[in-house]
Amino acid sequence: MNNLDYMYKQVEQLKKDGVYRILPINYGPCTNVIDLNHKSVVNLSSNNYLGLATHPVVTEAAIEAVKKYGAGTGSVRTIVGNQDLLEELEVVLAEFKREEAVTCFQSGLNCNIGAIQAIVNKGDLIVSDELNHASIIDGVRLSRADKAVYKHSDISDLERVLKEKRENYNNVLIITDGVFSMDGDLAKLPEIVTLAKKYNCMTYVDDAHGSGVLGESGRGTVDHFGLHGQVDFIIGTLSKAIGVIGGYVASSMIVKEWLLHRARPLLFSTALPPAAIGATIASVKLLMASTEFTDRLWENANYFKAKLNDLGFDTGHSQTPITPVMVGEEAKTMEFSRELLAEGVFVSAIVFPTVAKGKGRLRCMISAAHTLEDLDKAVKVFEKVGRKLEII
Image 1 (cartoon, rainbow, N blue to C red):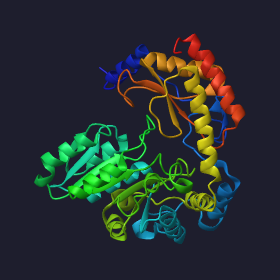
Image 2: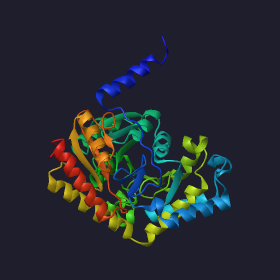
Image 3: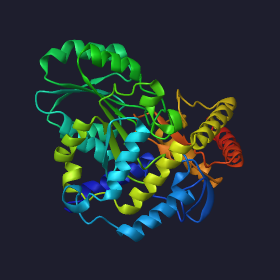
């Protein structure tokens, strides 16, 4: 018996279930219209919310950083990978986020698997929203703390957990996404902060899909709700709206000092490359100078969502540019995505295990880079395919 026979069987089951996929290949930059598998298609599956990944100021900054600093840092940050350019980025980000300090990581995922285990320990408790991102779940698993899960955005259930468990632990950390990536809804952050104060808990917000989207010029969910200085750990990504790669923790200075000593991705993985750092500085400065990018993003998102709703599609309860189109059954969700692609619109199907069984959807990611012509074409194709598959 081949040791990998079990894997062949699992892959065959994916094919039988209609959810097996072959990765598409993008033959150019990730923007509003892409060359996917050598076919020009409207791209509704990118996290490049503001179109900054291809902005000439951003790409030129990446080139200039490579010329000065080289292609890579050659070291973890705690040895010789801590270049002055990275220090500059953290200062710029802290100013942008209106927080005391920022610590940069190699990705948003690294933030969660690195920061959570450094923040809590045995004898502590993590209380987590049931729909939190997979990287939060992984970060919780890597920690030595106990965990409890509360029903999605259910403040009463969160308080029930705190009433039952708070007195049994040294520290309690409440963790929530700022924007939930599969549905596009917002955390009830003001209510969570109020409960955290009442029960003497710390608060941790993963704002990957709020960074660059919500708040003034994309300062995030905390800025959107006016809660500066009231959330202990704010996680942001540099790979979505900012358009590059990386992640960061915005916090007090004492948190930064601790993370630089105990966050494992900083201790055991090479620091961000100069090109990414230079590009990110340029990107954040563009946001600090103007609201034009976020304004255009929201105009496009509201336009597209209204058009789909008028056609009778179920777009869930999104409060952000993330626009889910609910389908339900997994194989039909995959078929919808394939049919759209054949008509020139790429939208990735989201099925189990990313979402619960029977909750399949297409997740449309609207960008400031989309033109009205792009969006109108997409809407027409959605209508044609939606009627063909009897989704509307």
